Length: 259
Ligand SMILES: Nc1ncnc2c1ncn2[C@@H]1O[C@H](COP(=O)(O)OP(=O)(O)OP(=O)(O)O)[C@@H](O)[C@H]1O
Ligand SMILES: [Mg+2]
Image (cartoon, rainbow, N blue to C red):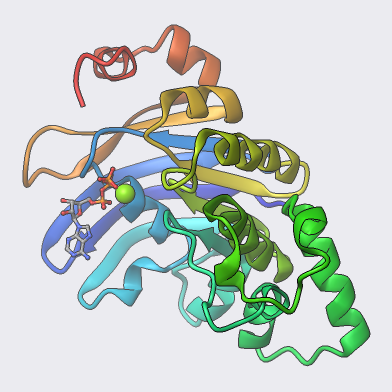
């Protein structure tokens, strides 16, 4: 299920504003890639361009290619809805549907895709997705209770269960732990480590320890000044980025000298 992502000369715009310039990078399957860099350098913008969520914003567009499994996501005739099914996304703030039960939340994405599913298959999918998200044991006795009644960390794992229930190939996460306490953060990190057996994962984080702990490769984005586009300055094995980066800007950032 897991897929490799090839980004080629990607420029990302908000109307006339070039927010991210000329990114070329290959993201390997069954790996975790962390994206780091100072605020406003375009990490979220880049992440959203990997499943065409960027275009939801009026005037937003890209130039260049994002190739997953041999297909350019931005090719003619490609349906963005299909892209978002293949490339799932988990947001910074857990966003379960508040009026829906835990069970309905897990199935929400599947139902949005107009998939018919019988009760038995739905039950199975709910269980495997919640198990996959390390949440099953905590919620199995209250599946009909509202998703909003869970703790923040549980809600984030519920959102991860909802994302993996549609069986995506890639999972994008934008600061998925920034609203969580340290224990829940570690639970989500454990989960990420398990998910990479099956998925290609790209995670944006401001937490250097988190990037170092849970990623195989790390990309450092930077910006030269306000109004300038963000750029991918360095992309390498996480060990290399944190121990012996090639670029001075990377070194300065990871050692906390700016940002
Ligand atoms: N909806 C939008 N419309 C116009 N410009 C935007 C929009 N969203 C982001 N930008 C601009 O694009 C640039 C990159 O923003 P982005 O949110 O991708 O940064 P980021 O690296 O994720 O920052 P942070 O670490 O604070 O989340 C910034 O200059 C930002 O102001
Ligand atoms: Mg962001």
